[in-house]
Image (cartoon, rainbow, N blue to C red; front, side, top):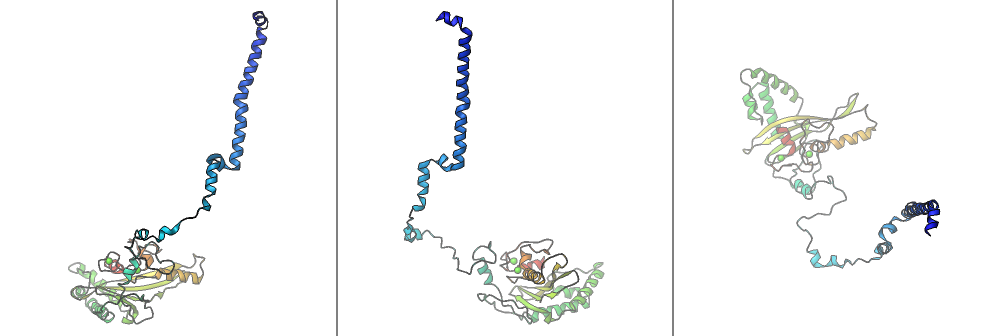
Length: 320
Ligand SMILES: [Ca+2]
Ligand SMILES: [Ca+2]
């Protein structure tokens, strides 16, 4: 044996090496190659079976055969768990503002006043609205304030102006000339109005808003509407004071849009809409109108008095 090994030393070592290399090759490459091919094939066919196992798959496949016992929903104990602090009234599908809290629109509309006027732009008042007690003739009384104001403007009577104005002007000394120029300009502009110009009147015991019907302001490059609003505050003493006038334009460039005339009109009407009748259009309240104010404060378009201080959002806008 020892002589054989000595005589064939090289042959034996070579043979053992070749056998060893063959075993190593088979172990590292042959086995893995087979396993790899198997995995790819299984994942491609049905990954759930590979990862969840047949028993679990079978269980899952039986889920749709389950019968749910719904009798618990009729159990008085289960019914007692319902939150009855908020009553959600059944309404027609959809809400004007899907993000408004439930109940908000209802409470705000209870405060909507009667909408009276002598034009055709009288808004529709929801039937659930309650009418406040009228303590003034809301059309003639605010118009009488404007008449007085125009008289004071024409005679440059700043004390008189202040007596019927929410904002107080100081016209002494060097400011006198500037005041008189402003008074003359205002008097000229307001001479264009008559009481009948203001077809819509919204009021309660704290404020009055008069507004004109939308006036078309079409020209060669744009079309749209203009509305003039006059805002008044009613003081605790019952005096009506003029807060101010806001003239608003809602316009669209005609050359810059592919919209049809009717689509443009619909868009303009949507922008004019003032759902809660507070003298501030919905889209101005949500700061989404293309012609929104430079400083736009978001308020609730479905609640006249967003901060519950008695003054409507439009009135407060005019007071700032
Ligand atoms: Ca509004
Ligand atoms: Ca308010």
